[in-house]
Length: 126
Image (tube, rainbow, N blue to C red; front, side, top):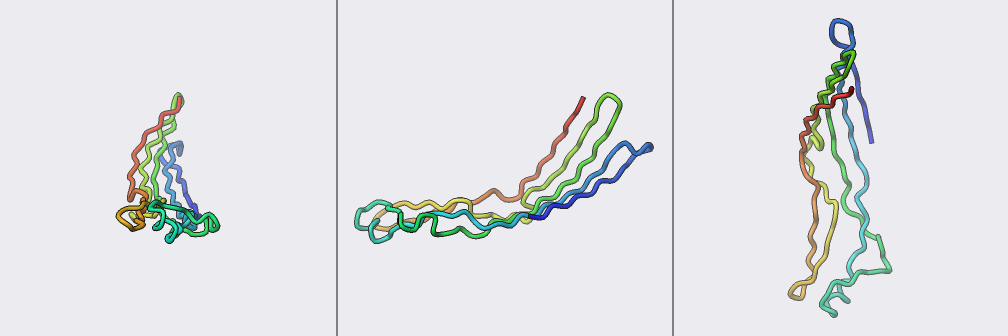
């Protein structure tokens, strides 16, 4: 994981803050237990290979997040405005692999993470 950010003082008195940040995340995929295909087909249901528990791994998970914030500091309160984009590259990472038995076959279905996620927020501190 890589994280970087920079803040700049803004305004007449330098009390307000403009901030930029970036985060890059790359890690190995989640581990899962494979299916015992022969036994599953003979029993007509999914049977996991318990001798290889968590023996397989999903593809690597990676994403890049970027954000810009502006903080207005006053005597009584401070306001923070944030615009952030999570998963800037819109990569759909595999987060889960499921198996099912249907019509004499073992079917595999992957679940994917959401793509690009824009976030807009306002925070007020009193």
